[in-house]
Amino acid sequence: MKNTKKKVLVGALVVSLAALVSVGSVAWFSASDSVQNKFMVATSDEPDDPDKEFDVDVWEKTPDDDKDTDGTEYPDIMPGDELTKEVHVENTGKYDEYIRMVVTVSDAAAWGGLLNKAPADIALGNLVIGLNTTDFENDLSAFAYDESADTLTYVYYAKNVLAPDADLTLFDAVKIPDSMTEEQADAFTVKDGDEQGSFTLDVKAQAVQTANVGDNAKAAFATVGMSIND
Image 1 (tube, rainbow, N blue to C red):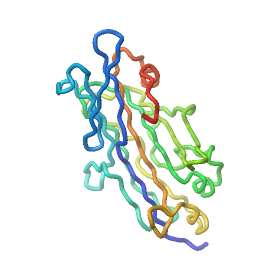
Image 2 (image 1 turned 60 degrees about the vertical axis):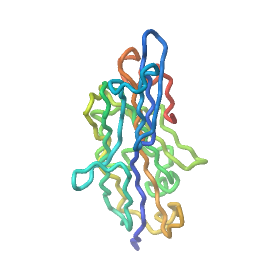
Image 3 (image 1 turned 90 degrees about the vertical axis):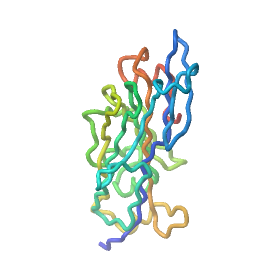
Image 4 (image 1 turned 45 degrees about the vertical axis):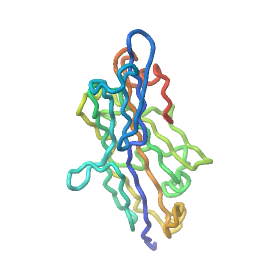
């Protein structure tokens, strides 16, 4: 078998955070301001009060133990490569949070050919290494294969409340099967003028308050009516 070097683009960014903070009775209020890939959310009557700060961040741990929020490009990968991608979600605000993670993978059909699976049968664990099922629960009902967009979407809820300044790791690497052939590698889409095919893996963190919204993360997100696309 002829091995071929292929370029794979893997990104990890905080792409959105939506949250609702209750004031007084059953009314819900929200506000947001995008700052460095983060959304700041406060009560509507005191939007500038720093004590109302409500933040979440996604970052990758670099080899130097730094926090990378820009994503990483992996050029010239080979069959069998394990690409370090230690994805963290961190509560950078001042209140406890319920957390939901949304992972979207491009080139679903190409992954299906590479893994010898129908795209709708590809689990996130087929794509990544070190998936944290101790702290996160897979929402199987939210899994989506979008044939028109050629994407796979996975949704995970943190099982416990995430305290301020605490963080959790969702997974730590992306794996390329040893059996990847030149034909399978060529199935990945050439993007943005690149000569080689690539895929993207994007991670989104969402957070909601813990008070008066239910006793777990899934219930809380249902209570506030937040979509995974928000």
